[in-house]
Amino acid sequence: MRRLAWLDALRGVAAMAVVWWHLGPRAIVDLQELHRHVDVGKSGVVLFFLVSGYVIPMSLERHGDLRKFWVSRVLRLYPAWAVSILLVLAIFATGIQAVPEPITRDPLGVVLGQLSMTQGLLGIPNVVGVYWTLSYEMIFYLIVAGLFGLGLHKRSAWIAVAAAGIALVAGPDLPRDLLTGGTERRYLVAVTVLICLIAVIAAAVDGRRSLVLPASVVGVSMALIPLLNGGQSTARDTWQALLLMAVMFCGTVIYRMHQEQASRLLGAVTLAAVAGCWLAGGWWYLEPGQTRRVWITTLLIAATGFAVGLLLRNRSMPPVAMWLGRISYSVYLLHLPLLVIFTKVLPEINEQRLALRVLALGGFLAIVLTAAHLVFRYVELPAQDLGRRLGGAHKAESQLRLLRGISG
Image (spheres, rainbow, N blue to C red):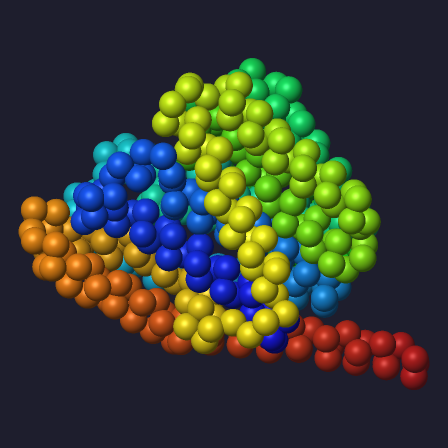
């Protein structure tokens, strides 16, 4: 749909920002000075979170069906993720890269964490570095779906402000690993979260209100993970994890404003409050210098990018930007494993002449985009089509039950 093309374009921009950031230390040494002040990759991630915050409630509420939502989410996330896992396993098996020590030290925990995609917030190593963001996405899905099941899904503004406010007031005093401190507790929590995820999805698929209500409470309770364990994520501190969650709900607040479910005043106050907490938190709790600058510029760049997308939302987007947006998930998942292969083939690329480096980087980007397009075409699209068919079958089944009830 044309009215959503700007969101695809933003996804494409965000994905390429992350790729650019990861290329820097390995092949674009000239940009290291810039990277001391700006984390383009983290800005891309925050932009992704804003887009998710906008899109996920829209997707859920457009159909008003938790079953269809969870079926589409599972088939959206896991197939391409499985391809990236297989690629990493192939890299390990062929000796292109040795299995990292954190993974060999705790293989069971790694498997349990990856299956629920919450490992990044449970202190469990990521098989691929970028997987940490999937933890925030999955927790966000659980909370949003839970709020919908409880009829509280239009309270996004208060959730965003509460998360940001707690982050600012409590700051470093928030617990870093209250839930998963120690290996045994980490296993217990990882298994519990996986069981909760399966139970929530199963309740949604079943559809009975007696199951959906408790499952929704379980979903909302997953907010305790970033609140009590956020320091286990790449955000490093729990207050940072809470602010990342608040940013996602800011995307939802903007969606509410567009749907006229929230006033412009409430929306503006919410966005200003979260931004203020982000900037003040960085100023108070981070060391002066590079770390503080990067934290502040990360939000400013991401917010500016999203604002530009909003301003252009009624205009036609360049086809290449929309294409990059469609394959952005596969780009995000595949680029780091492919970068491992790239640096193995060309280990001294930074020492080569500029022309050769540009040629090599162009070739690498072509490989990444081609691989992502193939995964999108032959894995993501069929999975999405299956999700639509399953959702359609559910709708037809519901209509048939209704007709039987009327006739009998």
